[in-house]
Image (tube, rainbow, N blue to C red; front, side, top):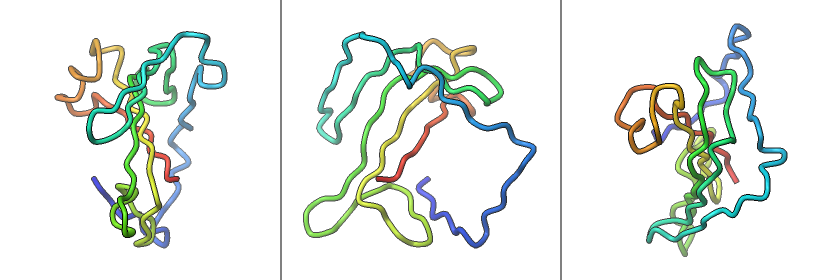
Length: 119
């Protein structure tokens, strides 16, 4: 990471199950904390939000953004065919069956699942 996805070389693997976000359509009425960590905006998410379709259940931890600065520099972390989008959102999930939170999970291979959305 970061990577440049070359669409001419992308192949679908039909043996993989689809990733299924769970709870995102109606996350409830819980208050969410939004903060500025000096680098980006971070929104803490309810642990009830899950990613299914992976080998284990992954619980949401937070989402944050990557965006460009003035003068056209920066933007999304990842590229598609050499093109960098204006911004990217990362929704960070952790393996809730093995770890208590993302801080613990980040030190282990397969501990995190990050859903990246180009904006």
